Length: 578
Image (tube, rainbow, N blue to C red; front, side, top):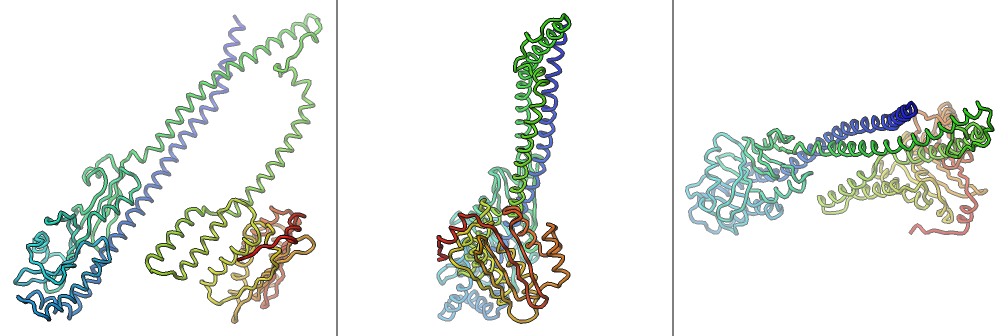
């Protein structure tokens, strides 16, 4: 009876020991994960919606900016204003009036034909014949009856508003329009009709979630355009989170509504998986506790039999200690296991040191996530081409920067000197665009060295150091930087020589001491990082030497050990830069 009690007690003790730490860990991790997930998701959604609204505001204001050029022609240019008055107030158009009308239509047809989002443009000055000039009307004028909707709005607002907007449907064609009115002097008005369908497609493409709703409202709160499953009134209910942004120039407001469920989707998923893990761990814990109880209790029974046998003076050697009865074997095997464990710890320590070196090397090469920046640079490159219609120096700079990012994105720690030189030349081109003819770069190497593998980004920091701390501080004259690469005595030598401002003697002493001791200084960070990476990659046999004289220039010399295979490759293989 007492044995059963201890057996059950031991089972529950083992169960608690198995389950309690794991369940607490899972619960804490699940709770923290839920909180962090909600905070992260909320922050991401806040930033994403602000960017969406900012982009929408920018796009719509770009569309409305067409009014500025029209105002220059029809509200400021006396010649165009007089032509409009003359044409609209003449009952029968003659040759001169048709010529004037053609001139006027040239101004309003150009933006309509060039901008897909503009449906039409009206020019109206009060006249006895109720006529107005419309874009793409092929040399004619229209009476108010062709489109009467805007006239009523004009009569209501002309004496109190300088500009206003409204949503309209053109009765004759059924087209959905967003009409923007811009008053001019002498009660004239410019009417810009935007294609609502095109703008709705623009909003749909910018949405993050399919159930998200986006609204564009006029200055009096009327909805000009919306996309999404809910109305503006429903969006301001308790089931959605609404973000808003206002346009100071046109008094439009932009609002984005996201259902609250999107904020809790990730936290709920974490809670669900946490609950599943708790159930799974509980089940496994019960099985493990039961197995451990049986095994341990069997060992206890063997120990009790040994103690009874010893007490009775029996030969205990007949009680064979099985491999599973590790309590007894532990005592006799302790010395052997100590040696084994010490060897294992030494192997673990060596492995950890290797991983630390690899991690540190990787961390020094990857100080940012280039995926996002690379994709953004490509987008900016095409946007510049789209806006300018031709290739510019900015496109060349973006392409050079993109090549550098692709090079840094490669997970391999090493590259050939040919690749390293190419990336460094891309960097030089970017510096040339920034500083013009501030410096010249001269390369000196044989093609046989191009196949030698080196740690990535060895040349670029040295060149950057020469420009920032040497050439830029040089007074007068064109700076010169010479990069010499050669192999000598089975070692790769890289010399970067500049005729810049040089380094003062005391500062040079501190710099050399910092390199020897591995301490990062307050300047020449690229030099320190390069030296550290080379030491991690090649060991202490890799050397960096710096010589300099104030006012004359600086020389940075790298000596990198090469394996026999690398030396043979440098002797036998040739690569072309073409």
